[in-house]
Length: 306
Figure 1 (spheres, rainbow, N blue to C red):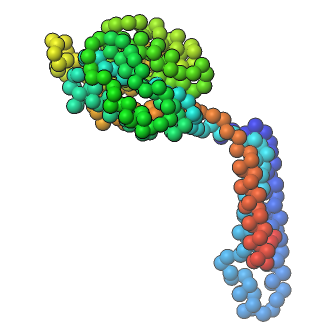
Figure 2: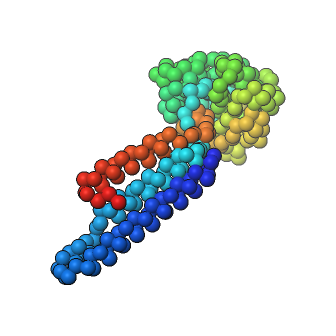
């Protein structure tokens, strides 16, 4: 938290300290006056109380004064707030997604992770789905209807063909508006072998204000072959890091189904929330006013307002 006018906070603290000092002086004089009584039992009963309502009233009043000073100081805080943005999930459906180094397969794990993203996304966020292999196609246009999105997951094509990541990113970008909070989440093994170069497409989208977060699904060195081929399943993490860096995003690796679901659920929040500076002056002033009003009312009921 920071303050636009910190001198007001200092003034509030100084006034509260002065008020506390006056109350303490007043209470001390009251105790001294009691010493003039010769009735010892009365003196003991008057000075032996463990709780003095005046002290509580003084403490809360001083706190309210400090809070008023803080409100006048213009407090600001940076918080992550939900935004009604657009997110396109780009799901790799190339032949390499048949690999079983992520159980039950990369494709099945990716579909489950997409569902996790949809479930975790704020209600105001429009989510769309693009599937890609050697070419890219829109499975679901951006919408806030989560039931529609869940149904669309079942329409993602089975794994087959090459991998055109650059074309998928371009297709996803065409589903996004010209402005506002926009992001693409790319779920792939990162091994591009068709279409436009994703390392060239990503910076262009980043310059247009579109964030790209990449999730690498798969492992290296598992020894498992892609079904129907003699090619070993692999994960190109360097390429995915480069794509994310080119569009102000982040890369996350997910080498098992559970991790993939949790990473996508976390991305649902990170890509649909943004840091904003919030002015806390009014809430703090209202809180201070409520505390002061409650203190005055309580002090009057107790008959001990300093």
